[in-house]
Image (cartoon, rainbow, N blue to C red; front, side, top):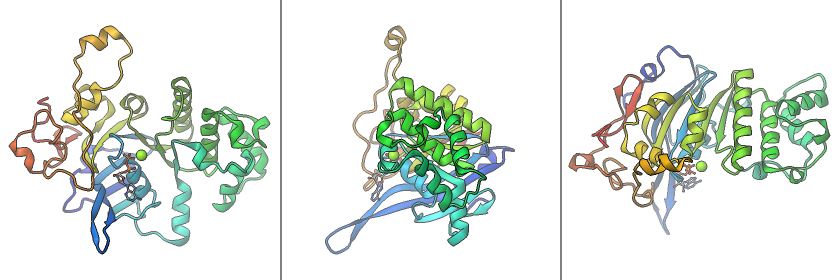
Length: 337
Ligand SMILES: Nc1ncnc2c1ncn2[C@@H]1O[C@H](COP(=O)(O)OP(=O)(O)O)[C@@H](O)[C@H]1O
Ligand SMILES: [Mg+2]
């Protein structure tokens, strides 16, 4: 199972759980073109190993530009990996082609932040849901009945069947996007910031809907967000990403009770705290500056240029190691901040 360069042992991380999805040493480098030559590469995803047990949620957090979307797209084969391996339900899907790839693409779906972009404005709800079913060869006795049932499951109904995306609110559009994906009977869904564009109250409704559907259909989620509060609510496990690399990974409870990477700590301390009394008593750790570019990341530990406790040793890259049982951290000074 594990490659020579593998950082995380998935067996040790997910003791006894059956993994639906595995990524091994995944890399995605985008070439940066100069006038004559390729000048270098944006290392958007750099040697990521992770797993997701069937029926569970892995939250993926990190600031904008850390490579979350790219990782999600590579896992789904929407983007070819530069190197590494993707395993789905025990099968290596890294180089699938033709019918087998098509079947994988039915079983593994994605929902985006902005359902405006993914829903064709000229199509009715009915066609938006029926057309992908046709493409993927999903057969049902009565398509209309099937779609109405799905609409009820996501909190809509038959009066919405022949309306167009612009007639709906943001939250309703996201419900349509969810029904559309569900119609294909997927097992795995990448949720890429699915509620970031919505008002807080609507956001909670959509998150609860996603949780209900997960229970009903035993769905497996990769839940991407830059919002740690939302990720905590949704996830069984959490991976923290910084400039293309996973810097910390653990169960959700463990990560929140005992964050060990200075980056995770700073992220946690920037969660908005609604109660002003608590907010005042809790000194905030600020992350100085913007994240450096993944085109030219710092040598050694990539976080060292913003880390409050960086030392000389951080000029060499810390490996991702199991610091506590099932708790992996890439830091020379875990837990010291
Ligand atoms: N198609 C692409 N070509 C070149 N660079 C890209 C491409 N897609 C993403 N990137 C770069 O990869 C890095 C990671 O981006 P992304 O995966 O979108 O991060 P996140 O989702 O965490 O905000 C960014 O520096 C981004 O500019
Ligand atoms: Mg993104």
